[in-house]
Length: 302
Image 1 (cartoon, rainbow, N blue to C red):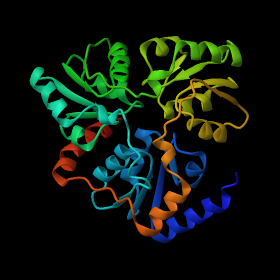
Image 2: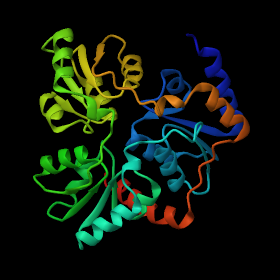
Image 3: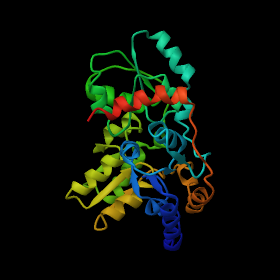
């Protein structure tokens, strides 16, 4: 389907409203094409603080839009579909974090960015899949509570030779990727094609892959590689950006990984949000102030 007319209309409306559109790599391809910036959670968090515009339209899921609002309290942040949530973020609450802190007094509480503002407010530091190893290296040797993703926590702790108290949460989409999926991909694409998977995948899958990377990391790896065929083990939306940036290369996705929440963001909803201002993101000021500390501490680590 040709979305060019709708994309141009959205871009025109955004210009009229003084709005900047941010889109995550897992969004629909046409939504990515309408955005001013596309990236992973870390790239978008950094971009959010650089933006000089009164309105941010965040095409992604709710915790991402919340993060943009926390970092830009004086700007209007809109999410085209407020029901676009994250099952992983919903797996842990602020009360759960407080209980873990009571159980492990003195431990530093760290949250994956895939968490609610209330959870971030209870934590000392935030990480993304793109910077978790670098950020957690600054806490090497300390006792750590890590929420909500046990897979990312396990991946980073092993890389650093550490042991964390991990909350038993996960991404229910990445969690389904299996060794059988990798084997099937290798049979189809050829044994020489590298398998790239996300840190939210299980330990067995991560260890069977050639590279374990955030979506932004995958984009960089593919761009810099002389290889021409890749097996991609993450949400299918990334294929649009990979193919657009590397038209001469071939990509095979495995596992049928599709996030229904990400796909809730459509061009029609983006347009409607721009026209009416609907979907404005609001975060309690007290919670936002505490959560901002955890996010800013992360962004300060280069």
